Amino acid sequence: LTCARELFARNGIHKTSIRAVAAAAGVDPALVHYYFGTKQQLFIAAVQFPLDPMTVISPIRDTPIDELGGRLASVLLPLWACPAGAGFIAILRSLPVDSAFDLLRSFVRELVVAELAARVDDPIGTGILRAEFVASQLVGVAITRSVVGLEPLASLPVETVVATISPNLQHYITGELAPVGE
Amino acid sequence: LTCARELFARNGIHKTSIRAVAAAAGVDPALVHYYFGTKQQLFIAAVQFPLDPMTVISPIRDTPIDELGGRLASVLLPLWACPAGAGFIAILRSLPVDSAFDLLRSFVRELVVAELAARVDDPIGTGILRAEFVASQLVGVAITRSVVGLEPLASLPVETVVATISPNLQHYITGELAPVGE
Image (cartoon, rainbow over all chains, first blue to last red; front, side, top):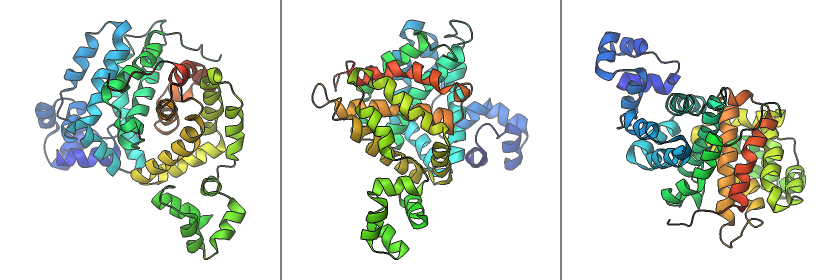
């Protein structure tokens, strides 16, 4: 886990392989797979995010599409305030900016876009963009609240933030998107 | 300007004074005021943002409140793609994360919140939060597009992004906010 943390911090998730982590730790890659599973699971273990991604993903998968905006906000926003989220933010803050944003990109792609895009792909071809617009608002509110510390937004109860941004997330999920090239 | 850039980069706008910049450059603070105006104007000169803030602020001031969402997006988003915005992002990327977010906080407070909050303060007391929710979406889309480089969002034409986020910005400006404590 120490080797993984160092490599993830230096190179980001995308450029860090299980093989590289295993080599740094002097063990067989199969052993890393056996104990930690996928690279994403290893990352989550390494940054001390004491959450199985499925505890986040399952309630999202079980939510009807026309309620996803509210569900995403109410599942994801409290994470930043819990010890795990605070740890993740502390890691982001300790990195060079480029590495921090590489981590953030991996986090968004692998947890938000991968889960959401296929479900909200209506009309066909819009799913990834819908998911990325959702991510833009979630990232924006997480950064302005938890990293930048913009007051009074940063101290607003999370339920109030959830209630305020949910209709906007839902607009990206099921509302009309501007046609590309408009 | 070199001294200003160094101090802004090291300490952020908030903790950098005209007096400190003048001391570092070995000149009288009055001279810095005379040539550069306010600290914000000095910052904009130092980061090579070749824009008078008024070229951004004037069209926003002249826009009716029920059209502000679209106007804010169409004025602010193209900035990140122009050479000045790219320069600003290059500076953000070159800083330690904490300094980068200090700059970002100053930028949001002094250019978005300061201009917007008083105009959108209806019901009374909601203006700053409305402005900060607007900022959360603008910052989120700027970061996911221009810093994180999340594709395909990053390559989407700016007009399409403007058209997609404008209704959401307008919701924060004139829509119903969740009551605090809900």
